[in-house]
Image: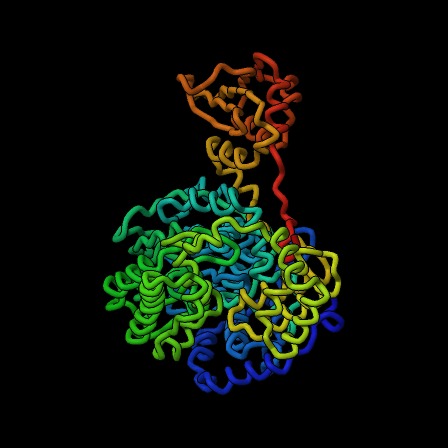
Length: 634
């Protein structure tokens, strides 16, 4: 997997395209560089953050190579962004507000109160959060954590919470604040589709790629994902409306709820006594995703723009600095107004122009090629597509309104990829002829066409080494030219896995803490999506759980390949084949596979009526998700 032997130099066409970017963009404007380094107080003495076993989960020196001039294997605009994101340490935002930046994909903000600190968004893993808090304390004193605030339901904003507080702190009254709906969406995103999302996130963030001039240089929003322990402590304070105010340790906060923007549950925070505005992830120094490449619900750019307008109206007149959970702050009232207004215009323009063109009959792919951004927005560095892109965001808007189908009946019932690929290759004269023509296109610099065509050969014959190598080379060159960090990572990860096979999922957010906060109903929902339907068509099994702690019993029934559940003993709760009285923790252990049903008979206090073997049979119809599924091969 060595960079020296695997990664190729930039082709002339890619190098020339990158040089054109260098000539056409205002690289002499260093305001962002000054802002990104403003308030720097110092960084950690130990630049490698490790877990309890001594394994590295984050390396602060990993991106030191970005200090050199941009090579021709990277888009200069992305190189600039990655250099800005790689600055690490503790930074003073304003008096009483500090940020730990460069210790994970996201920022951790520390707001000083009367006796301790409020921690906003404690990073992705406990190890990086603990290191960040230790850095803060080394400069500002050993202040206790008197509150935690999650701005939204993505794991890089709550996963490190156990690095700053524990369950005992919450029991002692430390509040954990989050927007309404936080827990529901944190669970649905990270558990229900978590395996697929995390596997695709391996491509999106490129955590397994070598870091360097021909490898991973960042993800636009930040550098990459840490690989430590992801946790979750459930919120104790719910923010249910805009205008709601809370005071923690003397820190006054006014909240603006922004559901349906960057996350289904999200909020902005104004600190009136500090003239500071936290924009969470709703306004950062890039165009964000409307549909992240790892997969998620499509976000609503119309609502996003509306909430940015509302934030301006509510807070800008009393704001001297705006900061977010990624990137660096913006200082000065006029600059904050310009920044938020341009961010608003960015999402509104994408929405309105996509709708205009789809109503003229253009498809998502056609709109992505046709749309042109206003010059004023193109000139602003913070509107560039380092993380989200104009191309995939317009397709997301199309999907939000019209779905996957573009209206052409020829696309209504296409063959699946591998089957279609075999037919395409046969129609095109066989693999050798396709590759001969593709090599000519490669030499001409038509890389998009190469990957589109050679993909058919790979899917028709995944063992064709010549096709895999040519596809890897073409993907690599596309990565070198990408301004978007996640596109670069996707392309380079595709090349890596074509050459070496699957690297699996380096970072998983399906963590024990997330499973622990599932209600029993949510846990049943999570199991239902693991039922192998065809294998269970003939099964009809009912199991009833009666909790020794009290409450209505929970009845599960597998029938017609569907696992349903209901509380109580009403008409929809079928007579059970087995009924078990036990503790809720024991139910969870059985459903999560930590305790075999047959072992329940020996546990004190457990009472079983009926055939416990039926429960074993029911659970036997569940399948395990595959965190190593193929992406660039069938």
